[in-house]
Each structure stands twice: as structure tokens, then as C-alpha cells.
Image 1 (cartoon, rainbow, N blue to C red):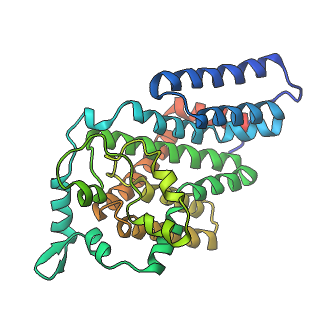
Image 2: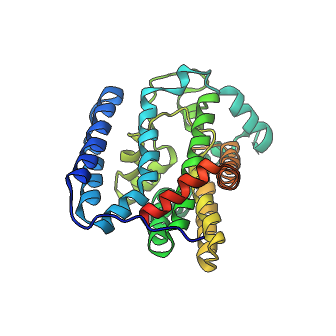
Length: 313
């Protein structure tokens, strides 16, 4: 499909400056009142203003990636609305279901795969799991950069699919708050609402290399009771689908390997049950399908999509 190219001024105007400042200040104010001020917010606002105002090319780039910015903001704002305040947290029933479907016999006890791996961990698996888990955001973002320079329409298809997958996952978080397996290991089946994020088995990766990568990441967790579905498992599937649609051959296989590695790492590191991973897969399929249906069946969405492509082309 051919879309008209929207003209973007080459010279900086007061209109662009006002737009950038309004968006940035509005974001900082809403963030302050919802979750309090953080330096991350100022950095994000600065990046947006810099790219938006630097040149026509950088403006197109930041507008092309604004879908990911929206995702991050929504994810961050979830801290203001903990899902455990809206529905009961599922702890024991999810654990029992995991044991029932995927339990592993260990002596007289039947363990979840997570518990089994806690007893049988290996340095190589610790390192590989950490490396795979580090891919969950860099791979989608890196792929988006590739699409920006290759095909702007495909970039928007990918980024909007990614956003919709997240929105589907967020809805499930609130309908079905669920504790991760590491929570059961530490707290049993009692609800402790103030529980902070935890590196769980990924601490072994940090320890192996003498770093605090995952410790820093999980200290910023929006909600620990958001294990079902595993969006870590869903994200790379969106990349695999987009790579397949773009006929990228070997790259598609590489992304498929990374996806499988993340699925394994999610369970091995005690962050997700197998059921969470399966739910993440279903979420990815549902989100991608919903995007395709909206693009095919909804005229308003199709018009929005066309205008957005024109804006970044």
C-alpha cells in the first residue's frame, strides 16, 4: 500500500516547540501526581524533546517509536493502581494447577518445574537464561529500529501489535492477579501486598558475573502479582511473527531460538510457571489477531493507521 508523505517542516517553529513542551510537561505532571517524580521520567521527556526538535528525520524517528513510549508509560502508571486492589490474588490455586499439569516427581514429593530447577541449577544454564532474559526488550526495540530504516509501514504494524499484546496482558493482570513461583518460595500461600520485586533465579547470573543488572531491573517492578500471563514470553513472539511476515529467513530462525530460550529461562529462573508461559503465548496470538482484525475491519483504525504511516514516512 502507498501512503502520502506528510510534510514535516525543516526549520524549527514555535508550534513544534510548544508541542514538545506541552507533551513533556503534561507527562511529568501526570506522573508526579500518580506515582511521584523519578529521574527516569525526566530522561524520557528530554529524549522526546531532543528527538522531536532536532530535525525532521529525528522527529519521524521519535514519532515512529512513540508507540513504545506509550507502552512504557502505561506500564509505569500501573504502580498507581495495584491489581491486587481490584481482584483476589491467585497463589495456591495457580501453584496447585501447575503441580497437577506439569509436576515432576522428586522422591515422595511432586514439585513444580520451578522447584525442580531450584534444586538442579547449573552455571551454564544460569548464564544462558540470563542472556536470553536480557533480550526481552532490546530485541523488540532493535527490530523496530531495523524496520524504521527498512519499511515504516511494517514498523507501525509491528509496534501497534506489540502495544495491543501488552494491553491484552494488562487487562488479564487486573482480572487475574497472580503470584510468581518465587513468591511461593519466599512467602508460601499468604498474601503480602507490599512484596517488592525479586530477581529470583536471575540472581545467579548477577552473582556469576559480579554485576547487579537484574537486581536493578526488578527493583523497578510495577507489580509482583502480574505473573499471568508472562509478557516476557509474549514479546519475542511478536518479533518472530513480524520477521516471518517480512520474510527475513535466517533472522526469523534466530528470533525463534531466542523466544524458546526466554520461555525456558522464565521457568528455570523461578519467575514464571509453565502455565504463565502458555498464557503469554496465547496473549501474543490474541493481540496480533486483534490488530489484524482492527486493520481489516475497522475503518477508523485503518484511517488512523494510514495517517500515522504518512506522518513517519
